Image (cartoon, rainbow, N blue to C red; front, side, top):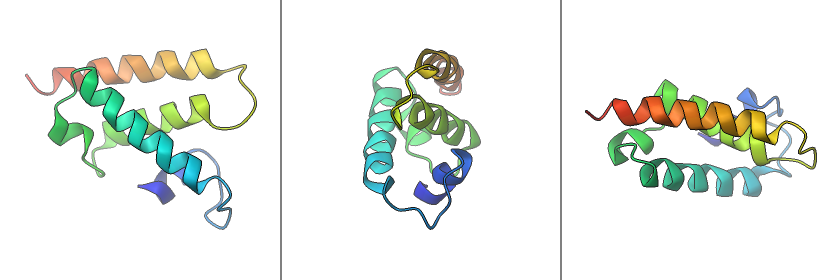
Amino acid sequence: MLELIKKRCGIASTITVYNEDIMIYIQDCIEDMIASGVPQNIAKSADHQGVLTAVSLYVKAYLGNDRTDTEKYLDLYRKKVFRLTLEGE
């Protein structure tokens, strides 16, 4: 999942300085999705397109020093998580 999230965030696979941070954000995001009501089997699915989008938005919100668009990405993330919670019903 790491390489795909990096690609979606516009980070070349050869750049590894952010890998540890991204892995932490991925785990945080999965835990947040589960706590928000996304079924665990969906939240932990590394090939579910909705999960990949949610994780990408989460990482984009928190990665780096520029915080001007954090709220925009978090809003999109929350909307995606809400839609993912409906998949379990």
